Length: 449
Image (cartoon, rainbow, N blue to C red; front, top):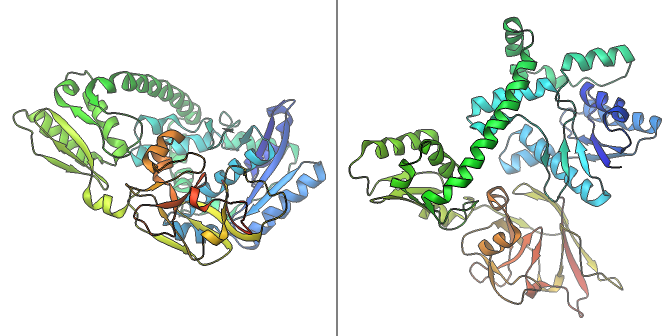
């Protein structure tokens, strides 16, 4: 038996999933997680009250969390949609870890999957964006399940009406401000006129695209080491060297070049310029092609990837922003939500803490605290390792890829030594700041994973 957490907003799709959960997850234990993003005032509160009431009436365990979504979006310079997504999936991962759930199920349906396909086509995400939604993993373990991808919104609405299951209407679904809504209300009706079964057609296409992408991924991983030196996942430190003659000998060299450079932020026009130089023949040495944080420099038979000097000066993530923590409270920075507390050390205090919770000797770490994104050259003495270690090497030990490293947030060490960090949120503390036998007061940083 598995334990499944159902993400329920109160809308028609998620209430359909909840009402049919015994059929969708036979024999499994289910509970509900409801996010109140506080974006629609009393309407959002009404959604929360509705979900709580339904769960209470049907004996279903219900978790609820309210989020400062607008503040989070503004503080992290991202859209409201992206902020809501980051906040809810971070909370889902936290619930799976803290309460022993195996997976979270979300109520995306066939229409949502088709909308995602079109949005990814417009964004230029390549074959990986054509895979649609599907299941995926969460940071820290657990899966995101999407049991309704084969069911259209029309089928869901018809079943709900037939069985008299109540649900809430989200007024924002009618707004043309959101790109997804514009596709839903303006594009899909045209598709339906051309092909009444377009959802099934696109669903089949998505499955085929996923298979093609799997083949391409296998080919890429097999051939990337043949044309590069120092290639690995991620973009830490010095980038790989790409050997031009070996690259051009491949039957699909343009795809290989795109896959090698895309993680470093090179856009399509820049890639086209580079391909034009390679195809022109003759001397290619001395050409430089710029991305926001990286540059590609051509030699006689090689392309060298290296960090731009101005990007290094701004920090490994390309962001020199620092946030100051003046005292205990709830904060957000760099995509992380966390709380800071100070308390007297209780008797029998357990030094080993669960993932996401860091404890320090408060006397060694006075306010104000400073948080920032990691930078090349950052180092620390991780607790228990007995020596100095570069964060770039620590990321390798942690098996962090590019997305995790891009979001890495560090706590500056109060000693002020260049590059010395006191902690890597949410998983490592510097030896000098640890809780000792004589520690009387503890400072705790709890990251909401």
